[in-house]
Length: 200
Image (cartoon, rainbow, N blue to C red; front, side):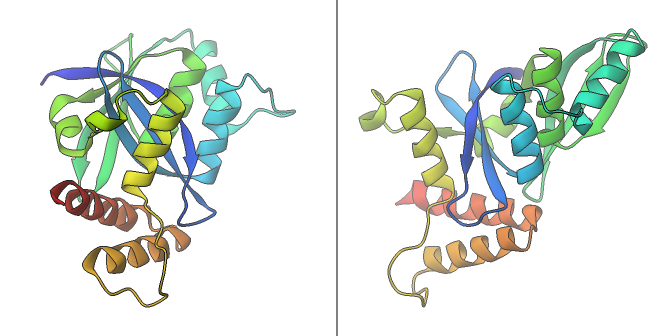
């Protein structure tokens, strides 16, 4: 299975709720973006490391990194290797004894940024869920592209409180799922919205 290297482009607060964020991963040698809905804690853990902020006490991902170092191990890569029912799956892959540990992508990325480990995704997953800025957006900066990608996936409902179109109903359900922290359902709804937006 062909793998594609990703870099962390950034995080964006979801317009649909206060407890969810969009983690935007970007193809290292291309323009495709992979948005993943994650929780506030994991978003904070990723953001703190990317900004070089040291918390007064170690966070869970800091502790895991210290354990990896203490056992004289090395995180070779993070591999986003599967997508089932709108839920992404990842593995932490270590250099010794062919150890692979299942992890949520949000946790895996939070650990990867601490260990300076590369992040990969299967090509078929990127083909299925990746977003590409439209040609009229090709001159946008990375910050603008991040907003574009997030808006495309989590477009906030405006206008009437009563959803009338299919996409408005899906957006309302997405907001409800995120408020309930049902991220599996939110990811499924996100993909449904994305498919409709692509076809219009």
